[in-house]
Image 1 (tube, rainbow, N blue to C red):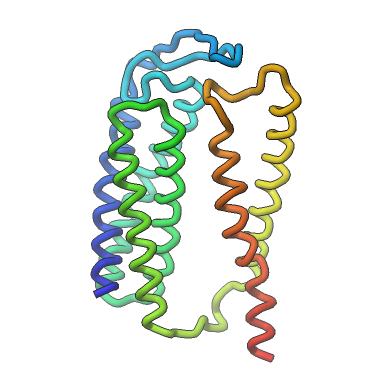
Image 2 (cartoon, rainbow, N blue to C red):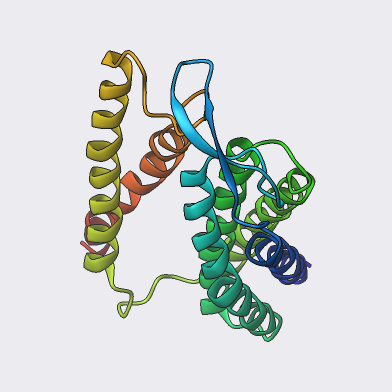
Length: 222
């Protein structure tokens, strides 16, 4: 049952992300911006139309790039993964977990960062489906009780997760310190540093245990 639930969640996520990313790419508006001043005296350019209206130019430019990636890479990967999960491929569950983690983080960020508009319900729906999918995948993985084989790239995984945690910490601590000491923080029209909060509050704590995975495995083997 949990495998079917996991497959259902990845399939629904693929459809919803396809719609959201497609709208982000093809309904982003005319590309017109107007110059505005935030309540904190920051001057920035704001989109005047499209599904991302009222968001800053910097946010729209980056967000549309991620929409293209989601549309061309993530959605097809989710479709293929859904099929493989239904065929009882254990490796597919690991891939599905990664993809659903991406979706959960991405659309949590979208839901709390973009200016409120017609995309908000869709972003929240994708977040909810992604969280449900992660829970289903975790339940199925726990039920299988399959050990991690020697072919798993433990050193590379530990280096990747540890390096990511360190990089984000260095980047964002410096950015936050600069914002707190600046008269006019660089917030791109936002009221706070949402991305920095999510990265330091979610990504870094999740990544740190992964950076010690090799050591844990070695201890067990011993």
